[in-house]
Length: 252
Image (cartoon, rainbow, N blue to C red; front, side, top):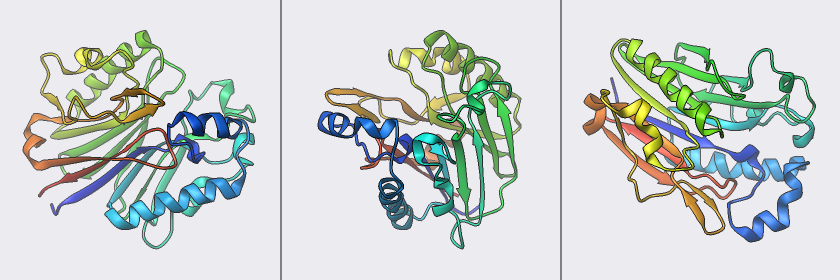
């Protein structure tokens, strides 16, 4: 397998708010209604990052495929094309959730775009409001999962146990990416990491989320221990989101 580059990003629905307090104060209204031109400007910044880093696969959480807050604009349309012909976008809420029908939340999604036609599967957490898990086969015996974990600690613990079972039941080596929302710190990863064959690739002192002076490590790369020496992970600030992006290079 040749070197594979993966970008993972919480896009914050591309509201153009980077986490500084002044931006939250000036642009808070964009959470309720964001004009299309603002979203397109943020998308152009994301596209510039994609062109600079040239990832093979881009995994996104908090992307909008059309809701009242996004002026019914489908953000994925600007991210696909000749460079990334393969993609999927899916509402992140449970299949029986009323949030799938409400105007404000019907477009709230996770998605990926890819240069290659990777086999993939959409799975679900058993607990929580946000349920979607993507499972993507990067190569034989190499599988990527990515998800957006719950804001509720008790639910996160249940989700971490479930995703651990998924990883352990999947043949070969695994990578897990996502916004883990571990607001009380890395100790929350114990249900996933304790006694397991998985390791956290992030540096503990490098935050990925900013709100004014509040900084947290929320966006994580976890992988099989056998992949540890083959992975290079960079944290890239994003001007369109209060989360930084993860850029993962997997050496052959």
